[in-house]
Length: 136
Length: 314
Image (cartoon, rainbow over all chains, first blue to last red; front, top):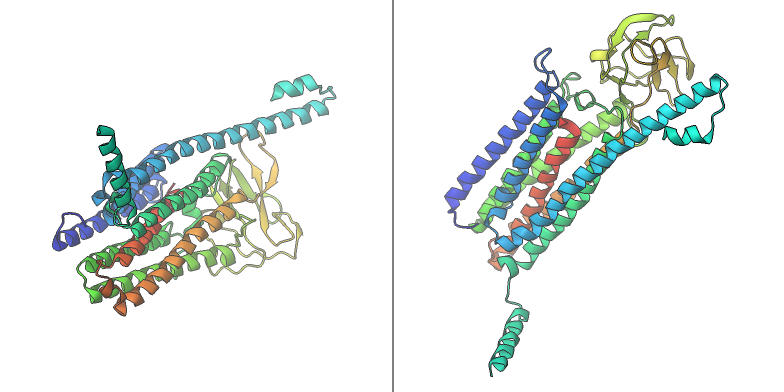
């Protein structure tokens, strides 16, 4: 429990739950406004909605782990053994989302190439291996 | 001589380290191990959520959450995200009551611990109830399954055909959502939102090709439309199912989280009963067991923050 008295920690818990509730509520309002559900014709670009949402969620995660789970009052060694491995996930997120959008690009290219193949076949042209290779 | 002293010191240190009294990181064995269990669990959940993200990034379209999750008990349709926000608050509040239980434990206040743990159990059970309702709506009213996803998003603009096979006044734009209805489904809980006005009852004589729709063997009605934009302008197409993996990812990830909540509720109940019988009074360690299940419970709430983020907000 660290250096806080019983009364202090009770007040702190109330404060933290209120902040968490306010953040969650703003997240929903922001998501609905950003997608044009609140005010007709008003919306925000997807990257802005996504960015703000991720930032707010990280603040919530910090409050839950550091205040509710008392990570703030643990010794530095314990904090490091939990937080440092978690940071590996940052790269995992970047790498796999990158990979995901590459899958989409490849699907598009295969679709385009297939359509080209069909139209070439229709006009009676010979579709040789060389063009096939270049198409990918 | 100097070497001898050093060896001697190492020896005594080791002996002290192994006699059982040392607490690395000034935390008890149970608490420390709970932290590392939660760390490994965080990686499991991250694996699932990252898989969801990668697959979503690889698809040209994805179901829009405000369209998929827009039903509210007794209020019907057109309430985007209201219900899941309610669920989130229930879980968040149960996290707060858990903090209070742990604090009362530090005060060795048995009644306080039991009272706040009881509220936490009720919060967890309430969350599970909400999730059951949400799953029931998706499965029985909207006919989503692990392998079939009736929620789609248009990737081209177009106009729906009427029952004579002619373009009607019912148009849609790129990015508009649609739900593929089930033949003969009642409209009690069904979507009547944005894109479904003017398309009344869904009654076809079994599977087959109709002027305004194609009905597949499973009874899903794929409405026909004329494309009005892009490369295929003028073509007649039928609405296709949305990305197939959506249903599997949704049920698997929220199900895995729900299972964590369920086991959490069971353990909370056991520890609450133990507190009630005075088991932890004798241990005189400030109800450490309550603290440990508290860590787990906050973790379940923490995971929900991210499930809420990727499935409902973005």
